[in-house]
Length: 260
Image (cartoon, rainbow, N blue to C red; front, side):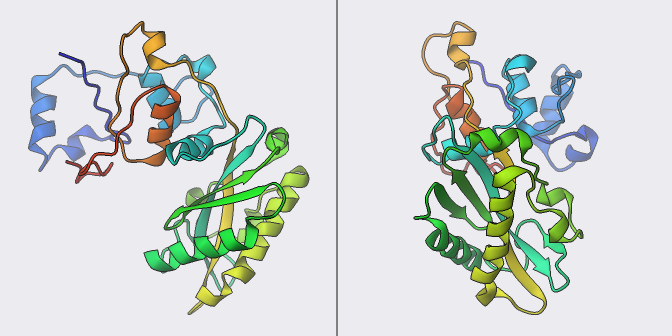
């Protein structure tokens, strides 16, 4: 029988999650329990760090700037070693310029899809710029040949900065910071038709990344054949691909509590 590793990403309060979940309750009651530190020293706890640790990747080989790259891998977006890859949220801003929602709350899915398409039409074709709408508020931006800007570039995660002025959260550092700040300002003009009742849309660039190389999981552990990962979240699918896993799309696998 082949082993299966089930990762319940983000489940930190075991007692609070057991009621109403009989399968998890049976596992917790019948199995051995304990603690394992999934966050090596010097890292912040996040999905990339913790899942790679669980899969046996040593701390020295865990990339610190690869999340957007993994998302590109999940969508089959080709990147070069010298590309700079960024996540781009469509965020909701208030009339006073403060960040109201990191995921465009207040705007429907069709509106967010259309907004991403409008930005792609405005920016694709410019030298060195590739913009990819991923659906809803999620998008990716690739600056071709921009990887060298990574050390100086500073960005802020939108989900941790609600209520702050967008002007304080713009990318900064070098020519890339200036370019991205200008594109963020331009996005507000492009997306102005969606504005209503003191709420508007803006592109928000963050999580700059570059390509990384990971030792294939099967090679690391001397396995024959190819492992497989069942996952729906883009960053996890991208990590699986980078580690040499098959990651088939399976109906009913939602990456949420309703997964089949």
